[in-house]
Length: 343
Image (cartoon, rainbow, N blue to C red; front, side):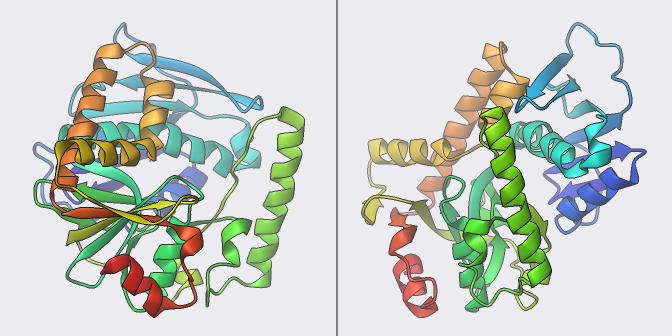
């Protein structure tokens, strides 16, 4: 299975297991655009295999204990080239609960590699939600659990077009934000805040049951768990319209505490400070450094420089940014919400 991310990068999934194929098709099927030739476009290839290949001296091989529950092994080959191969070993647990394993392979291995390879091309895989009015894009960057999904979907139900609720692609050279629509990750804390969403009793029951499972696992292991229910956007909001790529006009930093404020980006120090706050809300870079690059100080240093440069250049495309406490937003009053966030 091949997914072309706006000709910036191609993702290939190779697996004999139908369950993995279904999972990744649901995750990336709506992202992919038709191929127009792969010359010069980096490729990241994920192979789900029974046994890892024999490693070479330059391969990255990891054996990672996950939440004190199971151990996963994987190998990354040719990370510093335009064709990266990731070999992920199947685990017996995926027969019982595939998503626990496939989500790890996606969010902790595959997407951190995608993040790094896109940065090499000047593209940010931004941890953010976004909407557009069809002409201009509005980016909401934030740490997880701050309200990106709730805010972006409530704005979309109010008439704006959805760019994505968790990740966006930003090309700072053309000052363009690209949609990154994927299944929604629903939690009990946000299902009641999604006004007019079609979340039926069965879906609510699944989400509540996962809360119980999470509590049990946290009690047994002493670890924090974040177990979402992944649902296609159209199932919850059938009338939401998806945006095309658009120039970004405004960047908002969502927070769960503190006063609302506007920061004018008129000095290098202010730009650097805001860039640091945005980078601090990322999670793919942390997984990249911890799960893949531990000990590879040169690659880590180069990647940090690229992300700092990319976010700094993105901010140069806007005159100011807003820091907004999501608790101050009345999600039911869409007009007031639009006025306070987007003007």
